Image (tube, rainbow, N blue to C red; front, side):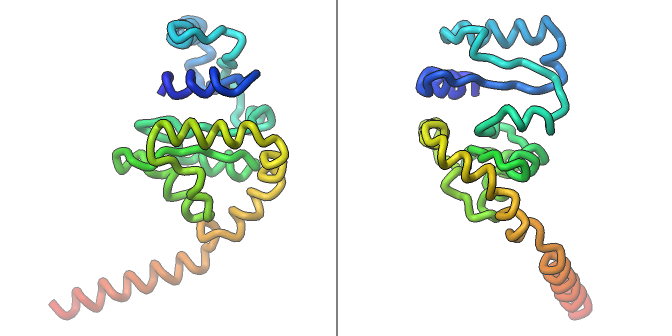
Length: 173
């Protein structure tokens, strides 16, 4: 994961990486991460290691990077809701496929990479198009609202239909 993020930091001019997580509030932990990135030639100034309310952090982001092999879930929804594109990696253990499912439901499978190299390429392409990023910031929330992710009525209908079918099959046995 760190190697992929390093590749992004080295490819996109003036790029910075934010890691916002409670352990980053601990100096020893933050220093450990600084050392991990320094081993790849990344300066401390390119890293934002913080622990702040996630909603506040989104105002500082252009792109969210879904980590791997394990991934985000709730924070993927939050980032998209706040208008932040999320780059995800498709092929990984089932618990790591939330990004693919969420982005696919929104018709944004082009942000789901099939390899680490694709993950980097997608992020670089988005990072280099400031106008497109501004467009996504203003349209992603409405896109999410119009997607199956927020179709509670449709979901409930499908769930009820599945329960009825299960009951029908049970009664036949």
